[in-house]
Length: 211
Image 1 (cartoon, helix red, strand yellow):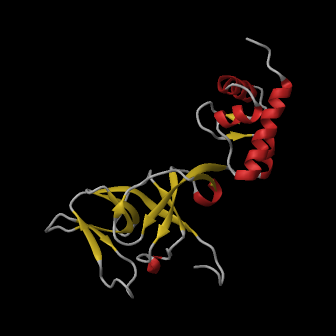
Image 2 (cartoon, one colour):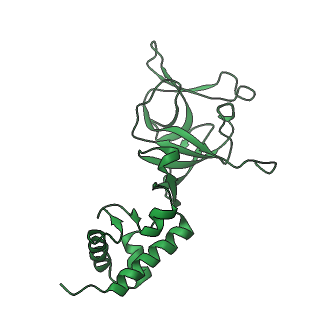
């Protein structure tokens, strides 16, 4: 194996630190390779070797790379994909596309599998979710009656609603609105329901200019 360059290792650390400061998450192996100007396979070998030397923390699988600077100034965090919008109204056809990655501090959000959706519509305002809010969804947890869920119906449409349980007579799943002023008592009933996650946090802007 060709002897590894200390200069390249330093360039990798510098690139990861600058990337983290700009985007608040860490780069992929491919992004490191492009940023430093080395092949992807070489970048991977350097990361593994640098981890063994204690220069960085890298598990060889995920895109999470922690340098001494990140460990010192940043809390433990994990990259979370922002995958587009979710209708807070009538169900709409599911279209998933990752727009960017957002770093979630573990001390605030806990450990788990998360993704983020931008709320669209007004049917959940009584639950504190307004149009344009970012909703943090957890996928590795049990669903209970009363939870706010991302629901995928049998027609491949999704919506953000309160899970109201199963009607014992019709065996339909109930998805409840939370805006009594506009949608009093309104709900969606579906025979086939897939829950794609449970809403755990809402990220919103505060102030007079908040929509």
